[in-house]
Amino acid sequence: MRAHLLVHGRVHGVGYRYACAATAGSLGIAGWVRNRPDGAVEAVFEGRDEQVGAAVEWCRHGPSVAHVTGVDVVDEPPEGLDGFTIR
Image 1 (cartoon, rainbow, N blue to C red):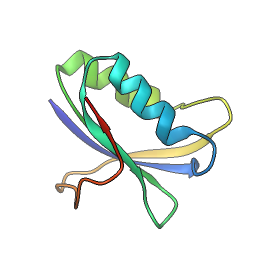
Image 2: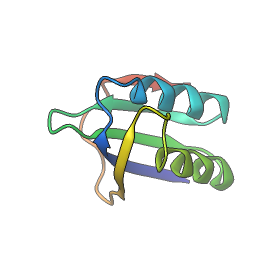
Image 3: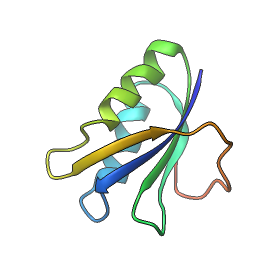
C-alpha cells in the first residue's frame, strides 16, 4: 500500500517532520517526509496496509506540541524526493 499525505496545522518548527519519519521507520515502512513552502508537511509511506494505516493515524495527531488541523490523502504522485528518507 502507498499513501501520499499533506498534513496541515502548526507543524513547522515543532519537530513534526522528524517525529513523523521516526514513527514511520519504527513501523517498518519506507517513504519520505518533507516540509513544504506552503506550511504543510508532505509524507509518502509505502508498506503493508496495517503499517501504512498506523502511520496515517499517527499523522492525524503528531507530537503533542504540534497542532494538526487536517490530513489530506492526495491521489496524484508527489513531486521530487527531498526531505527525510525513511528506510
